[in-house]
Length: 104
Image (cartoon, rainbow, N blue to C red; front, side):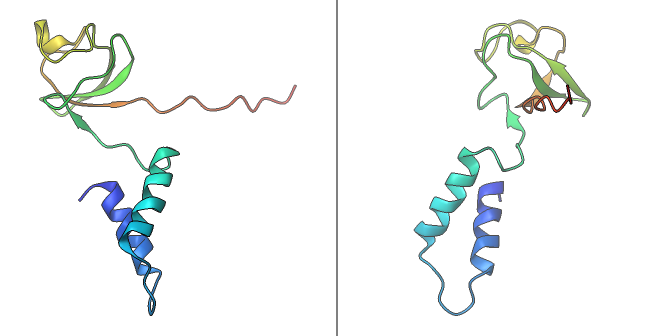
């Protein structure tokens, strides 16, 4: 079950007597997902790879996590297409950098 389906279940659990239509809960879950409020999930490199030269978290066949880039943004290629790491199985985008909260 992915994060969106878990969110729909949680939302559904708040309603006891009169449950809203599932489409309503899906709309709420989609809105939360669009705002990037769900935890990221690992993406298989057989499904898709990140855009060209964009830093990403990558997971190799040994279960080690690295930060790396993909030189082509296309599935396949030399060394599984990754610049520094061979045999990458999954990846996910890096989170956004924190906003500058320095007091000036």
